[in-house]
Image: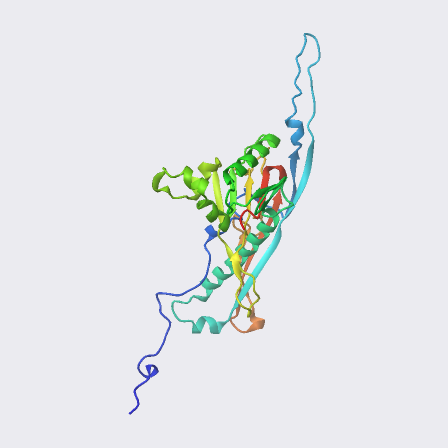
Length: 326
């Protein structure tokens, strides 16, 4: 008599206490953590920029009795933002809801899936706008040996000097703007290289536990914060072999970024978030439920939108290290 198969004695069904989904947490992304968020009610508008050179010029003069005081003017120009809308949706049919088994929740899963797509889009745009060469006042290029002007020895090479390189960047920015950079943004691979760099390890050997963290790096580099981009993305088309890597690449950015935007407040960049739309949250994001009867009775579209603009405000408040590791 043949032995009973597994299917005869047990009917497979979904476990109700576990599931697997590669949803990255918000902390993995940097787009809303580096530069101030400016909430705006209108999709586009103007903001004012004061000419830096007028404010840094020494023009006060000694005044003799009965004579005019020295005087001068400062120039003001305008710049424009325009918040573009980015969107992604998933359709949910009546059959999806009726047939789902625990722990599946097609509504919650769809919202999380859509949110992930929007976060990836914003992170990509942030990287293309801010975390690349040709954007900031100074670009330094990492090389594997014998650096010359405009270059530095990559921080995973023997003999490299990341502490000195970053110190030079800070001094350069401060000498041009009067503002000392307070933020260092690192790609994940750059962060790991710095954590294991001999110069850095030798300086923290007597600290608690002797382990390099982002907080220890910020103290060592004398910046208020170190922000690490851990987000990853799959660049392969659907159906092709997965091609996953860190989204921010192997770069570093030294910048001045105030805690919040304000009048006469300089910053390397701003993120303008359009919150004027009905239901929009602080980052210009919202989730919409749209009946789609043309696709079938009970079908509903869950659609996410995010409306924002990423603007370089003061390019001399950014100092970029391209290809900081191999």
